[in-house]
Length: 218
Picture 1 (cartoon, rainbow, N blue to C red):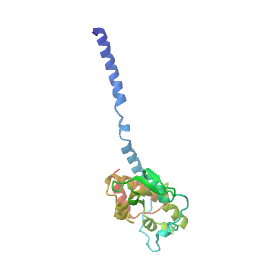
Picture 2 (cartoon, rainbow, N blue to C red):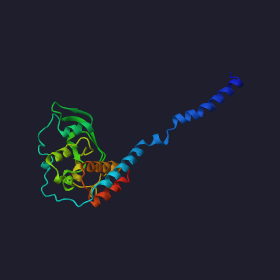
Picture 3 (cartoon, rainbow, N blue to C red):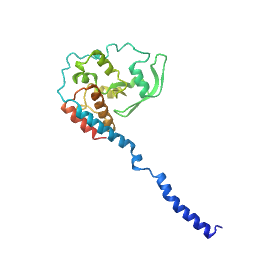
Picture 4 (cartoon, rainbow, N blue to C red):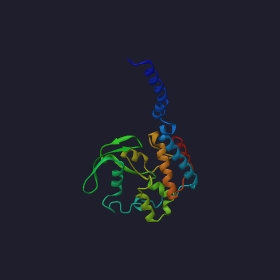
């Protein structure tokens, strides 16, 4: 049997510890929404970068060829091609053969939310399409700069997506195409702006408006 005095001590101790436990177990507002905060910060930075981009009419597509960006597309500059590097980076449990080609793995396509379990259904998309970059200023670049752009693994220019989403997008810009998954609009817009800002490519008025609209999803 617990004595009255002992029961009183236990009750007092519980009242003292209760606020401490509540503090430790209740997440702070800052810790509860790190993803939201990160998206908001990314969107704010993207808006600042977008404001610095020149607004102009698109250049002519005359003279464009994929080979202007990928002159040696069929040849390797290292053991692994750029495509194979992106597939290894973006996939889960990727297994490669002796030639660096992925023979097994799982890939997620953020454009449409598809989970792809075969490399045959995966494309590596240029977020800013090569033909679109050409009309945004890359037409005036050196061959070396165009190659660097096409193989850029630092900026968010290369991403694994489903073949069907890549075909649907083609060479279109955000004013005429956007990911079917609205949840990816923020990431898509910030990636597009980041690439264009780094390479000092200009935007059209309709493109700028479309990007600002997508940033509202952040």
